[in-house]
Image 1 (cartoon, rainbow, N blue to C red):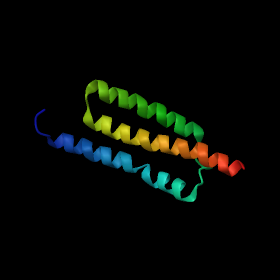
Image 2 (image 1 turned 180 degrees about the horizontal axis):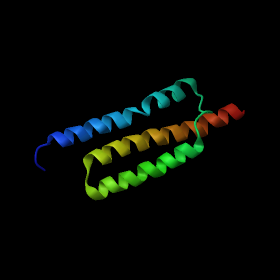
Image 3 (image 1 turned 180 degrees about the vertical axis):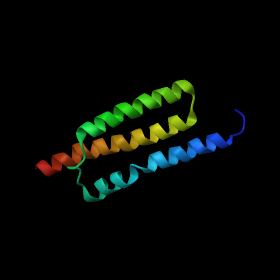
Image 4 (image 1 turned 30 degrees about the vertical axis):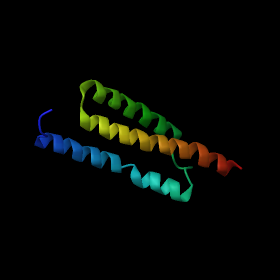
Length: 92
């Protein structure tokens, strides 16, 4: 692989910005242990969206797409985990 070009840096900036979009929501849900306002449908749709883009990025060997969607998938799975585990605690 040759050195990175300006467009690669732009893609990596996009990775950073896309990934941090979910950090405040994950942090708030983790610290408050409150996930009642998180839509299960939104999380499922997001997982479908992100997994589709992740596979596309892998097939195309696009590092920016792979990184962004792998990070977002990890954060989404964390939100799903909190939705399931914190939701059960609220029911008790």
